[in-house]
Image (tube, rainbow over all chains, first blue to last red; front, side, top):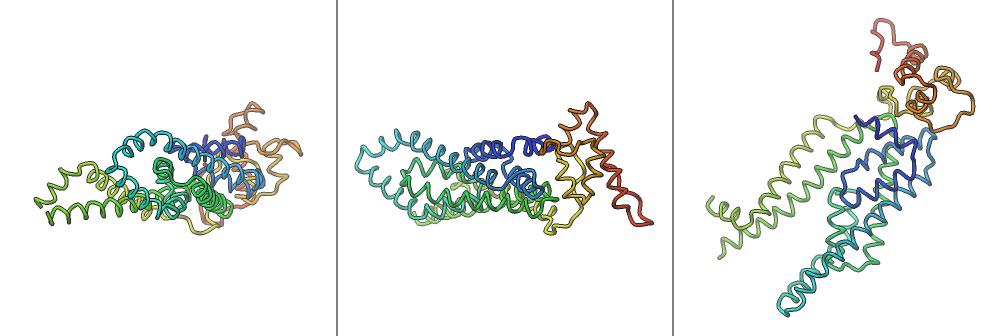
Length: 199
Length: 122
């Protein structure tokens, strides 16, 4: 079933990887992990060259993060303006943004490669809550480098096992992302439950 | 229990999200446990397929390059980075024919130990 996708990698090489990593950072369901692993395998065989593939995949991913960030900023502006008009809600907004920004570096960095299923949404939130752009760019670029290097590296080393590896990687990624959501939502619900008891 | 029901009513979206995340976690953990990643680099190579390039086949199956070139009908110095699909198309033969030829070469180069049945064709 995945054969035709794999067949695109040696034919379109770096350009394909750039497009796919861009789209995956915009939350579109493209098999970016499988293609990065496959590209790594074709680097090992000598069909593709590492600098072109890694550079293109990284560039596509960083550009995709930027697109998500600016989309969030654009879409979040009207709501933010409305909330800022009243002094009361403006203060709440400011407090919420400050709290988010405190843990933003870790959230952005880890959602590039470890919890990558959450990455596109973190991009939108970062843009909407006015995370400083330079800081977001730097942290996301470093995180994407880890993601691209990790997957192409694994494909390079385990070039005979890419399909099995891709299956495990997507299950592992799904488990980690879902695990984080369980923890975050569980904590919020637990707090709500405590407040309910207190009132 | 009553408090839990009230929580569900007060925060339906968050509760639903929590349940969905828990389910997704369970499913992916199950997949991971039943199909653990291949943490050995010398496992069996993937079955021959049309997406593979000659270089990939050489790498995965450890074949003599000139014999593979003969089997695929490639002239020395042919454009690199062609998949078996592309080679088959340019020669006007079904890709299954090329795969069968490579499989025969694999059998010949790495014969299965006596007493074992030959590997099934891909």
